[in-house]
Amino acid sequence: QHRFIFITMSCISFIFALILLVLNLSVNYSARQQGFNILYQYEQRMQSHPKTPLNQQPPSIKDADFPRVNKPDNHWFNDMRISYVIYDSDGNITEISAGGNPDMTEETLTTMAENALSKTRNTGSQSGYLYLLSSDTSGISIYFLDYSPEKDMSMRLFRLCLLVGLAGIIFILILVIFLSRWVIMPVHLAFDRQKQFVADASHELKTPLTIITANAEVLQSSLPGNKWLGNILEQSGRMKKLINNLLDLARLDSNSQNQNFTNFDLSRTVKNVCLSFESLAYEYRKTLLIEVEPALTLHGNETTIKQLVTILL
Image 1 (cartoon, one colour):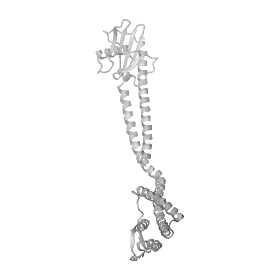
Image 2 (cartoon, helix red, strand yellow):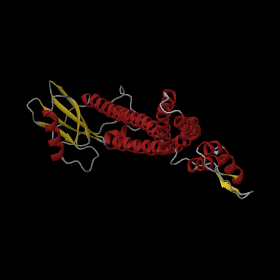
Image 3 (cartoon, one colour):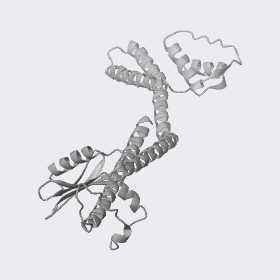
Image 4 (tube, one colour):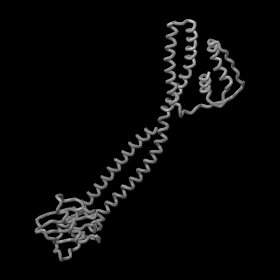
């Protein structure tokens, strides 16, 4: 049962982790692609906007200035998150803007632009910002997008999926525990019946084997040197060893076995077992005296009591 639960929950947990990983990667990829699309749109709008000297305030970008670009409802919010640095063909900064980010300084923006210039790719990320590098004959433009809203959205989605998945795994674990008991019930019953059969067969075979051995020994005393009696005693000895091994196995298997206790007539049970030994006592020229108080009742397992009386006799 424990193995069934462990294997089932391991498979379910692996599938859940795989789904969570794929979902997280796809959301992050989609968010990054959306961020780069915002940068590409902003770059197109800036290309049609005249460059202004560094010591002049750039004119505001209005939607009416760029009628060819489709602008979403959150266009103003996206522009507030964008910072840029523009270089001329000689590598001098001609325009720099931190956008609406109060935490962004010109020094930090210049350092980030220099790091972006040292990269071999035109797109990438650094310090929580996505960047887009665009170059033409007039110079180089580098645009930065504050990526924190997308990252926060991805993290919130990841936490939500993780909590829902853990709750689902706990529910499935409870369901698997109950299901495992139902699944292994036939196997459990089969093993219990097998152990009970081994124990009962071993005890039941021991009594006739003891009688056969005793009768053969009595005959051997009357017919010494008879090879047939010798073969009977030899095979009986081998059979006794096998039965003892079965008994040992039965004892090991039935350590935790629950006994079926009922009320039964102890007097009748003991008398019946004793009567089966009358012939053995007669062969050994001994007197078997049976004195059992009648109508004794015991709450226990009748089969094991029979086995116990047989062993003692």
